[in-house]
Each structure stands twice: as structure tokens, then as C-alpha cells.
Length: 234
Length: 212
Image (tube, rainbow over all chains, first blue to last red; front, side, top):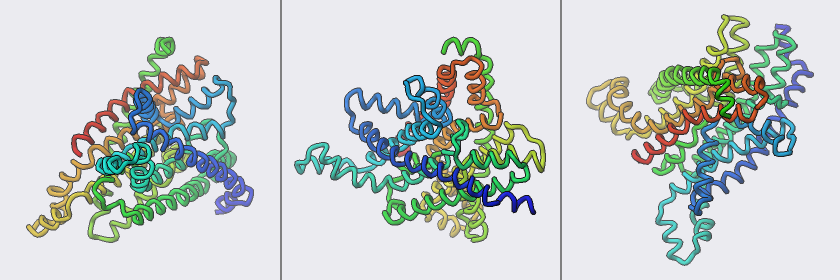
């Protein structure tokens, strides 16, 4: 019992929280970046620009089908080749952004595809240009459909930041491992703390996704199944 | 890269087989456990629904690495010695089963409720109606998403590298540190992962189009 109390001493809690801060920082930066890049790549893939769309589509397929750990290694060992020497923090952010923006690009493509063709045809017939129709008619509806899927993708992003311990990112997982590495009695309390902390973050995001799903009324429509299939990842 | 394949082909092959093996075992058990919890989630008994919901939310919201490390670190300490491969496979099974449960549940719910009501009205019990009427229809809907789950499972099996599971990723690390050619060894590993996941992913996209 004493060992359990010792595990949650102020020093350890502070150490864990500093790890959690890194996890949250990495998650937030990667979420913002991958949201932006994901939408850009998703649109490029959808609009069928000659060659470019095919290449982007191929790259998306390749990266989506590789394990994230491998991509973390690629960035960590590959970026120095290109002349950057990233800290584990930035290597992780780059890796997460690359991987997750490809996942989101796929969600965006499915979301845009789920909008009936008539919307585009109608907009074009009313005199909007292709890009105007995309920007003002198609995207607003598509993004509404995609939001629950995108939020679940962000949940897996938060969980996946734990994989970066392999390149010694000082995140929550890494700090917990350091603590129970010093005193094996602390192992179970540390795993409990890890589970609780990740669970709180991810579950609140998942509640947010359910709320948005409910609020936007996407769950009962017939089309979003297509989006839902790409959601449940990792 | 060719040099890597030439001098470390055996290691890569054993890793590849280990990854496949682990994925298949995990898929098999995750399908059973996942479908079980999916059915529990739609039973009329509230208590069972709560249990299923708790299980699914628990394993969906905790990182796979934490689950796997738990089995690798805690279980051998207090209960029984298990290998890294076993710990990784158990963690992967539990984690994937939660996602499969959600997928199967959405499949069950996409079957018209009239099917269940009709079969109940015709005198089938809840379990009989589930077994003979609802599930066969549900599985047709969920085959493409389940395929995507399997792709995720194969990718997630790389977590075995953390727990000395001797899978593809682990062997990749070994080769990278042995040959000092990290980029090309990871490229080889990536290529081998793509051999499993890419065809599956294209096939699932084809199925999605066909069933839609």
C-alpha cells in the first residue's frame, strides 16, 4: 500500500504531467498541421489534376498502408540526410503530420465523394466556376459530413503519440517508463496513471465526436457510411 | 536495398512470417471477442450493454502501446512468464477487438429493425433471430470495414517491436543497427509491409464500390 502512495508522490506526478504536456503539445501541433495538409491533399486527390492527382493518390495509398512506427523512424533517420537534425519532438511532429494528413486526405476524399453529383452540376449550371462551386457549395457540406470521422482520427493521433517513445520523445509514456524503471513497485500504479490520463483525453474527444455527430445529424443519413469506413483506424 | 535483401533476407523473412502469424492469430480472436461484445451491445438486457460499452470504450481509448506494455511488464512480474510475442499478440487482440466490436455493432444496427421484429414475431428467440436473421445480413455490410480493420491490425502489429516480438519491425531495427544503413533497411521493411497491406487495401476499396 505504501508503495502505491509513493508512486503518486508530488515529484512523480509533476514528472508525469510534464510528460503529458509534451504529449498534448505534439498532439495539438500535429492536429492543426495534419488538418490543413489533409484537406489540401484530399482536394488535390479529388479534383483530378492531370498527373498531380495520380501521384498524390499513390503517395497517400503508400503512406496510409505503412505502420506509423516505420514513418517515425523514416523521419528520425531520414531528415538528417536532408540536412535537418530534428530533435525527437520535431521528428515526431513531422512523422505524425505526414501520416495523419494522409489519413485525413482519404476521409476528405470520401466526404467529398459522398456529396451528390447534382450539387456540383447545379452550382455549375448556375454560373459558378469549378473552384467556386467546390469552395462554396461542395466543401461546406462535405466538411459537415466528415467532422465525426476526423475527430476519431484525432483520437487515434493522440494515442499514437505514445509510439514516439521509441525515438525517446519525453512524452507521458516515456516518463511513466522512467518512473517504473527506477522502482518496480511503481509499475502497476504507473500503468493505472497512464491508462487514466490517456483515457480522459481520448474519451472526452470521443464524446465530442459523438456530440458533433448527433448535432450535425450525420449519423442517420444514408451516405456517411462511406466516410465511416475510413474512420475506425488504429 | 538489394544488398540488405541479399545479406539479411533470412531475418526479414522470419520477421515477415512472425508479423503475418501474429496478425492472423490476433484477427481470429479479435473477431470472436469483438462480435461477442457487439452482440452484447445490442441485447435488450441493460447490464450486458453496460459491460460491453465499458469494455469497448476502455480499449478504444487507451493506446495500444500501453496495453501491450502492460502485458509485457506487469503480467510476468506478478502472474506468469509470457514471451514478448504472446504479450504483443494479446495486447493487439484486445485492442483490435474493441474496434471490431464497434464495426460489427454498426453493421448490426444498419440491418432494418423490422428484420428483428419480424423474426421475433414469428416466434424466434432473440438469440435465434440474431444468429439466423440479423448477423448474416450484418456481416455482408461490415466486410469492407472489417478488411480495413485487418489492415490496421497488420500495421499495429509493429508494436511487437517494443516488446521483443521478433516481428518485421523488430528485425528491421536489428538490421538497421547491424548494417549501419538505417534508411535502406527501413525501406525494405516498408516494402514488406506494403506487400501485405496494399493489395488488401485495394481489394477492400473494390469491394466497397461493388457493395455500395
